[in-house]
Image (cartoon, rainbow, N blue to C red; front, side):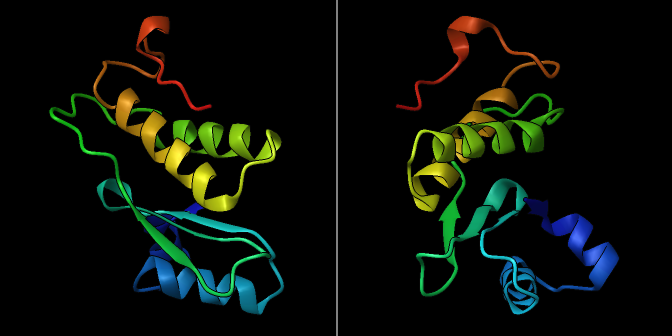
Length: 116
């Protein structure tokens, strides 16, 4: 799992799709690239090509602390439950969208969205 901002700095990738194709070319079978408020790109071994998923709508972002970590947690939780890459990325986007609507990295328990 990576973020496009880091990939731009490290590898001069212009967008998340370029990152996904570069990583697949070196043999990485499961790729997830966060693209901030635009969403994410996911490409798992059972997909023919990368899939771009839009971010969850957010009425008011107040603090982006832990948005990326929250995406990763949602993504991994769904994959460990046997869900496919698309469902995992949607869950990651959903948690990240929830987290940025609260101050700090830890949201109230009642605010946690249901993933499955």
